[in-house]
Image (cartoon, rainbow, N blue to C red; front, side, top):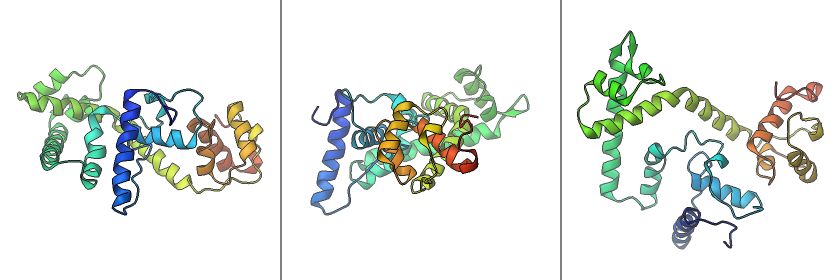
Length: 243
């Protein structure tokens, strides 16, 4: 509550980061920071530092612009090795993780080798009407443990195209972090941008896109519109950014 949040999960997330970094401080090591594309804890911590909550902060999935990457089924892929590096993942858990990754890799390869109706099972899994039972039958999967891998691989197959685009967006955002905002920008002329964002940007006059994106009241959607206007240049700054 002191930090402006409520809820059990929010408190647990902050406590975890505080405890890890307190220990690292004692050991004279650098602090750990989770990115917004890496974990919901990273989204929460970034929001608390860069924005001023108008009410007790709750960690909703809608707050994460990269939530397609922050799925429950891939949390181990995102965070296990970091946890191991920090001394938070024991040998048994690490071995279980490595075994899951082996099984998942084997399942992906199997789905790409087997053909049904002229398409690989990996491609067939993208169809909304395709069920786990059908994929199990096509691959002759009978073991219960493998069924979990089928479901996970199917999820990856269905989201594959979107995930590729989202990772490309993340790379572009990282490159844009230090991109300077031109002096010719007139925020009132950015079509589609919310009034709150325009007023905030005019008030603080951020020098870079990274600074602008961290201002309270400026959302990722506002930043996307601003990036379009900057890319188009001063000659077309009044054009509709949403086209």
